Length: 378
Ligand SMILES: NC(=O)c1ccc[n+]([C@@H]2O[C@H](COP(=O)([O-])OP(=O)(O)OC[C@H]3O[C@@H](n4cnc5c(N)ncnc54)[C@H](O)[C@@H]3O)[C@@H](O)[C@H]2O)c1
Ligand SMILES: O=C(O)C(=O)C[C@@H](O)[C@H](O)[C@H](O)COP(=O)(O)O
Ligand SMILES: [Zn+2]
Image (cartoon, rainbow, N blue to C red; front, side, top):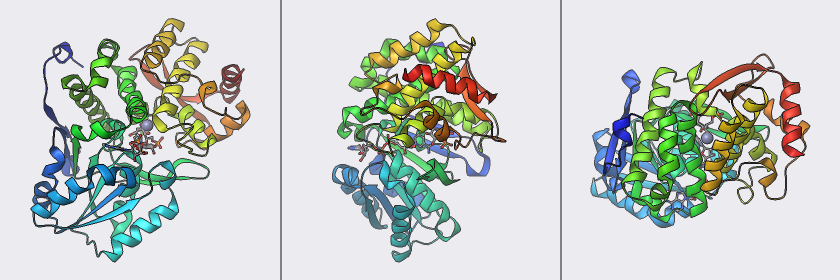
């Protein structure tokens, strides 16, 4: 984030380009942009659009999406799944793809993912494999999905062995982030999504993190600061994805907090009443900074600064905060051994030398990770 962007200038919207050559696309952020879905789908040459959504989002926003598509003269269908992480599974994927095939969605048509990250990952993966690939338009409705999951093309479902273990890279053709949809998002989900916003500051942008520390109340309240936070997050993610689309290097930085966070999510069997993804990421980022401090890589004060900010917004920072508790250190380490960053059986973590100074650490000693987990759970 530049100093100019840090000033509280009003912003009503933004367009962020994800520069991926012939698969480049725009992220359109603003008020009411969901109502443009029909005209934009038409401009992409679609004839038919299948809107994949969940039960909560369907109640609040499906009529707007279907109305926009009908107004543009498109044949629109809805496929609705149950809300929550449990829908990111092979059986729901099979149901969704069956419905898309039954609706005769063709290769030239579009799948529109209307919802949070669960719907985005599930519908995006369904689009990736349907008839060996149809295009996807992401219309994210949670903060987390607007700042993270709708961008970058990671799609997939969970396995009983771990998070997102079955999936594909399938970039969307367009992202429509309608900030008005956030008005119906439950506060707990807004807060959880904010963890991924803070992540961008912690990765490589201390100025952004400082602005978040000063401005989080305005971001939670809505208005221009919220839009600026979404746009800044998308700019950060778009830049990383453009230089390392398939995670051979830098893109792994976006996994800050996720090695620990995904292990906690798997440990509670993806039970969102105990832990949702963003909460797992908040705990995981605090743990990554404490682990970095324990390894002598960053100052303990930096770890405390991270905890302070996450706690200020009401996010958890310790695995002991997970309702009902979590398993022992050995079990958590077993979950972490299924992480996609594991290479040659060795663990990879995203660690930090300070706020905004994260790096990819390969070959982290499993004994040190185990000892750290034991102190975290003591
Ligand atoms: N692909 C990626 O790059 C990426 C990045 C980050 C997270 N993810 C994935 O995203 C998922 C988490 O996404 P999430 O936090 O959006 O969870 P989610 O999709 O489960 O949405 C959270 C809850 O809010 C509800 N909801 C969403 N939008 C709403 C709205 N506007 N009004 C009312 N209710 C609404 C949903 O029905 C759900 O109950 C996880 O599976 C995570 O692994 C993927
Ligand atoms: O886009 C990425 O790359 C990320 O890592 C973003 C994460 O916030 C997201 O949760 C992602 O799904 C995790 O990826 P995974 O490869 O660890 O499953
Ligand atoms: Zn995430």
